[in-house]
Image (cartoon, rainbow, N blue to C red; front, side):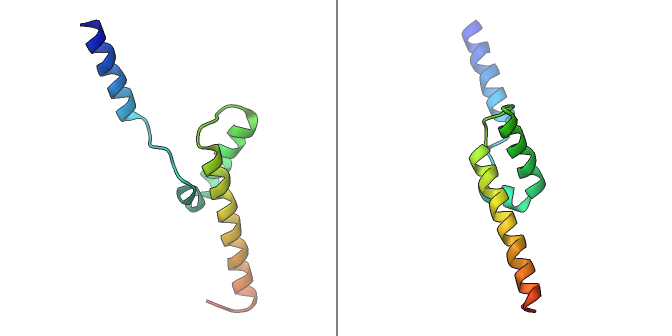
Length: 75
């Protein structure tokens, strides 16, 4: 009985946790990516660090390309 209860509790916790985010998700939310990267650098988490760093880099790249497009007047 205890084993079933423990398995049920584990299943409920696993179902409630957020799925890991990918780099594209972080690229669309650079503020969230920056928070996760800061937490990684401070040692508070080791979850999603690589995806957050890649997403933040992609968001910065998109911002640079947007500024470049504005400079040469491309849509």
